[in-house]
Length: 150
Image 1 (cartoon, one colour):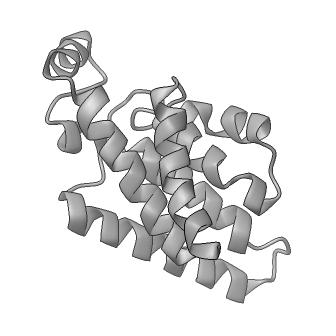
Image 2: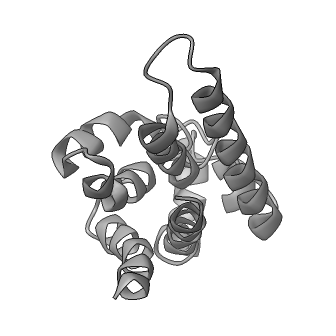
């Protein structure tokens, strides 16, 4: 039963993305209930992180959504909790390294091959269909990596 649920979260993230939530919202929302966060708050929290941090083409929103989930699960709640901080940073680095190894980059700009921060870049992304083809794969990948780390 557990393995069915584990494969379900990445697919849930893709389904949410295809329904119109941004990449960061989709990943965080797929894991939110498991981490004690309701889906509405997860989507509010992750809103500004989509499309590479507020559509700036920086770190992929699927990655930032996953990083927020790691923080929810392992982050420190006391200023002096160095072990929790260290575990969170270690898992975050692992996720980023594995994502970069799979896809060659962490930034939307590099992953998409166009600058999502500009109207011209967004038109090229749309014309190439990347939002419908590449982005769901990146969402699934980040969610799958996260699933294994949690």
